[in-house]
Image (cartoon, rainbow, N blue to C red; front, side, top):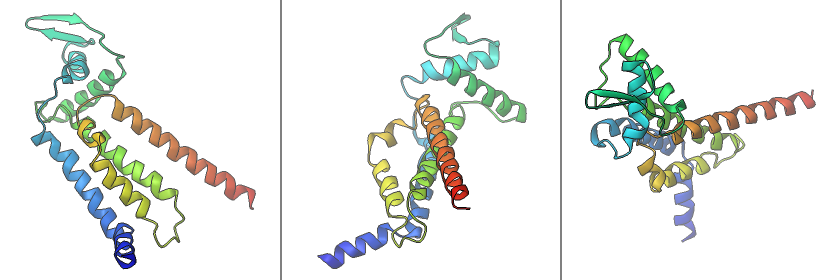
Length: 182
């Protein structure tokens, strides 16, 4: 039994599994554009941004009428609209397959940067360095996070900002510690 547990630990600590996990997350997140139907509440987070793109104001188009609407804070709608304006300026189509491309990019960056944050918590010389990161990526795949993160909502962008802030704090903390020992 001890050999079996040690074998599982060795596999979970391998760099190959980390690459496989990140590759599977890339397939799941970017593939969701094709297999995941639009969600029932996409309207609340997407339509306002489309109003900003096409009507130059945050609002909704209902049949032939456009009206101002603030169902939530407009930050996510503005970020989506800026991305979509750049997307359309490049000449790419904005349709049912591409309207959530920014969100998918944000979700994948969130997973990758969270894995990087967890990886930085472990000493590089440690034999089981990738064990916590692989366990995190496996557990994220079987939790409700994996189901809900792929629908365009502002939570992923907020979590990404939090992880970027934690990584910046971690880097600043380590640079402060290296200055003390000089």
